[in-house]
Image (cartoon, rainbow, N blue to C red; front, side, top):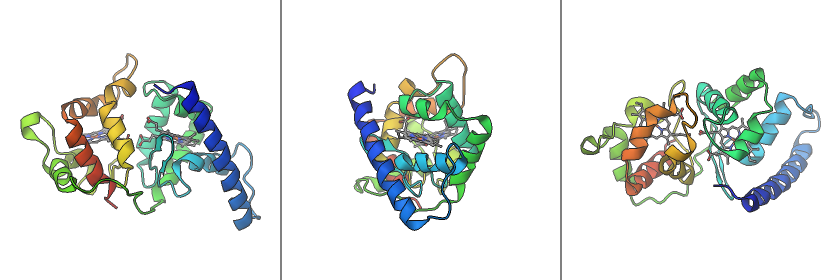
Length: 216
Ligand code: HEC
Ligand code: HEC
């Protein structure tokens, strides 16, 4: 659960970052002011949390990498936040005001960004993670991640890219899957991942999250 206190801290940090980034933006580029409510203004807002290159950001919460993410996946998740099938108060507030055409435009933008992975994950279990990623754990009913997310972790359509994703974010998603995703009565794409998330132990989650976090 996100407490009021942590939301306040986040709001404060966001305001601070927004002030810093807009000051930096003015210094670089005086020619193209972002029109309020337009795509550029929205993107600047996204990037105060998700990083200037969409590389993610480690704040009070981990802000996931969006760079190189599949547009279909981004759009599907924005809709899931809006419809509260995926419960996250921050992203609900961000997304529920966006028009359908804005959702599509935002989702497409991140596709071609390609910053280096954020890094910082523990390296001790990367080889275990690689093995889980490529071969799965047949004895625990865990399929190879690569079968769906691709050998390079780039994803496809509504299957997300995992390459370069923040370690803490991935660990959080896989350990909390049932509490945040696939909420409500309608079955959605989150159901495809639910058994896999459930069958991984904490140590296995940490290993595979570390492995994908370093994929370029
Ligand atoms: C105040 C900070 C903040 C802002 C601003 C923000 N986000 Fe987020 N976003 C988050 C956090 C935190 C999460 C992780 C939510 C979770 O843990 O489920 C997230 C998650 C997401 C996800 C899911 C990513 C994934 O891998 O599943 C998408 C897509 C997303 N944001 C898109 C956007 C877009 C587009 C914008 C701008 C319109 C935006 N965000 C603005 C904080 C923010
Ligand atoms: C049968 C196909 C399939 C397999 C196998 C699979 N996944 Fe997924 N995965 C998905 C789909 C589809 C989603 C999007 C779920 C949604 O819409 O919420 C997803 C989402 C995820 C996410 C959330 C990403 C984000 O940005 O929030 C993570 C993390 C993840 N998978 C990790 C793994 C790992 C690790 C493995 C292997 C142990 C694995 N997946 C195996 C299909 C698969």
